[in-house]
Structure formats: structure tokens, C-alpha cells
Length: 210
Length: 210
DNA sequence: CTATTATTTGACCGACCGGTCAACTATATT
DNA sequence: AATATAGTTGACCGGTCGGTCAAATAATAG
Image 1 (cartoon, each protein chain N blue to C red):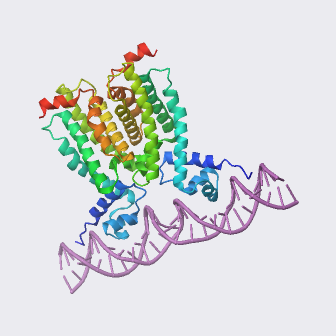
Image 2 (tube, rainbow over the protein chains, first blue to last red; image 1 turned 180 degrees about the vertical axis):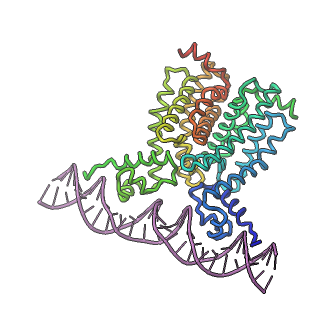
Image 3 (cartoon, rainbow over the protein chains, first blue to last red; image 1 turned 90 degrees about the vertical axis):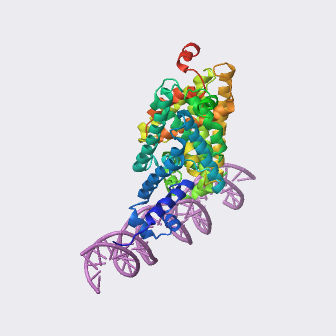
């Protein structure tokens, strides 16, 4: 009973779009409402605060990231190291697309909010940390599989996974700073392999992937 | 002639402190003035805008970073690879100190502003990009020296230097996100060596450094 | 048709935003 | 002592901030 509405989803999507292309603080509740085609009162009917909308937007981003980046790249019929390289390839494609569409490389939604809010909002910091931990677990499993297959030397998969996530966030940050998607291409594939202590992946890919 | 004043430096230092521990947008001109013990009119006597104060704060940060982190770590009587490890050690010390003093790991001043403002303020983005390029050049020289000494395999020093800077920014971002300086210790030394394609540094350090 | 519930509306709140300005004070030069 | 200059003061500007609220409206259940 009562009316039904898609205002909630529209607000979440607006928040994701606007905060991704600018920042948390630079997007006001009013602008959020305008973009969603919703009145302010409706905003506060669905969300107790701007922070809570942001948390919902982070949930939405997890879905989106899984569908558009992670699942295609980490498809199990690719060998594990190729998955990680495919992941960086997707990140490059995404950055290049955003630059073409908006003129800017927006970086990583999660990393952006982490940097802007970690020292100011413990709830958002915790959520962001959790998302990054989930990602780290995925990388860890992939790396562990590569070690089992002896594609990588024996080592601590968990710490290596953290290092890979750190590297990915750092590369993304630099690409944003220089507004240059090409940086991801230049730094992605090659050095992530080196980071893992692997040999150059290209020769290996020739026999095991192609 | 006329009065003399240290208000300018006090404003720069306040900006550095406040924006570093929170964010650009969360610090208002009013708060900046209060912390510096200065009236608003004086602010705009010295700086045409908040953005210009931020640019001055970035210049100040370059000095500070050079004195407290870079020069001690990149001291030329250390072998080149040890310099890079010493750099990460200093970054860990700094993060741990900040956490003890403020309760938060604040990340990297330059990286923070890069993430928050790159898509919004082209002038600040350009300044930040320049600072990171200067840092990359320092790393490049160090890496090139290591390659000459055959401490590292032959490779493109410039791209490797970019990868190292990216990795450092990523590690710093993760440490901030998890509010855990230990992450820098865990990920710093070991994986930066691996990133460079070097052997484990500890044995080498035993003969060439100690 | 009525009651119930979900949603929408838009005016309103005090606080703060970045920035302006004209008057005033302190110092140094002549 | 007169003048020029550098710095200081604090009130003031229009606009936006996140958030509140009471009343109106729309849809469903009985």
C-alpha cells in the first residue's frame, strides 16, 4: 500500500555519478535532488542523511564493479595471472572511456572516498575498508591458485594480494592526477607481474592462454 | 616600510595542518584564520583565494617533505636500493607518529589533494602533478644508479620510477583507509624490491650497507 | 467508500561558505 | 612632523550547506 517510487535508486545513482566525478563535499543535497528529479523532502524520507546515501551508493558501486569489471576479468576459464592482467586492462578501458566522456580520469570511487573521508567519518571509512578487503580476498584466491600451479614462486598470498591492491589504487591515483589513462596501460600489466615475482607474462600467455 | 607580519606563514602552516588531517573542502577560510590567529581581511590581503593559499601550502610541503623524508633517506652514502627502502621506512615512521598524535593515518598531503581536487581544479591538479613528477625524477635517478651498479636488471628506469611512486601512493592510501601504519611496514620494503625485479634486499644489504 | 500507509511537496531553519570593503593602525622613509 | 606603505580589523554580501516539518497526494487493503 501507499505509493511506490524509484526515487531511492535514482538518488543512489545520482550520488554515485556526482561524487565519482567530483567529490563528496562538493556535491550538495540540493544538487543530488535536482539530478535525481526529486524534492529535498523525499531525500530525507529515504535517507536519514547524506552520509547514509553515500553508504548506499557504495553498495551499489560494489555491484557495478563486480558486474562490469571483476566478473569479466576474473572469469575462471582464464589462467589466474591472466585474470589479473585482464583486470588492469579493464581498468584502463574504463579510465579511457571516462576521459572521453567527461574530459577527466575520475580515479576509483572507493579510493576517492577513502582518501577524502577516512579521517573524518569513521562509518564511511569502515565501509570502504571492508570493500577493499573483499577485493583483496579475491586477489588472494587468484594469487594462491597461481602459486599452486607454480606460475608464481611460493610466497604469502595474502600479503601479496594487499600489495597488488595497493599498486592498483596507486596507479589509479596517478592516472587521475595526470589526467592520463595511458598511465594505467604503461604501468599496469608489466609491473604487476614483476610485483608478484613472476616472469614476463607474455611468453607464458602464448602457451597457456591462446 | 609598513608593518611586518608572519601572518602569511602562519596561514600556510594552518592550511597544511588542517587540510592534511581532514580535507580541502572541510576546512573553511574562517577556521583557517582562527587557527592562524588572523582576521579574514588579512587572509585576503595575502592570498587572493583559498586556492592560492593551497598552492602556497603545497610549496611548503615540498620543502618539508624534502627535509624530513627525502634528504635523509636519499642520502648518497647509502647504496641506491637501500635509499628506497629507507624512504619507505621513513614513511612508516611518519604515519605511525601521526597516528599516535592524532588518532588517524592522514595519508599523503599531495595524494590527498590530487584525489580530492584533480577533477575540479585544473590549477591545483597541475601543481600536484608537477610535485609527483619531481619525486618520480628522484626515484628514476636512484633506480638508474642501481641499474648501473647491476643491483637491478637492465630496464627502463623512468617507467619503473613511475611504478614505484604509484606503489608508494597506493600503500599510503591503504594505510589511511585501514587507519593502520603497520600496513606500510608490511608492504613497503619487501614488495618494492620485488617490483623493481631485485632479489631480496636483506642479504645484499648485509654486505654492501653494513 | 474508508482507512491506512508510502510518497511528495516546498517552505523554512540556523549555520556556514568564500569573498569584499572601507576605515584604521603600525612602521619606515624623507 | 609629514607622508607613504604594509598590515589589520570586523562588519557585511549573496549564496549554499545539511537538515526539518506539516500538509498534501497517491495507491493499496478491507
